[in-house]
Image (cartoon, rainbow, N blue to C red; front, side, top):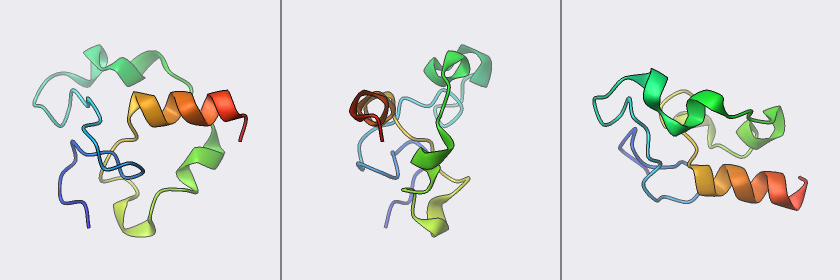
Length: 66
């Protein structure tokens, strides 16, 4: 199980979260992104609200049109 807010709950890699790194959320890569609601259905229930999805997973989800 993923134990860090800095790890993507979908792929297990670094999610690049500014907040998890102790920086301002305002400067995070995700601040200007739109997350389709359907992507959150893929996050394990125990990790919802605890770890951010990475840009690579978000981009792949959008690219595949799921």
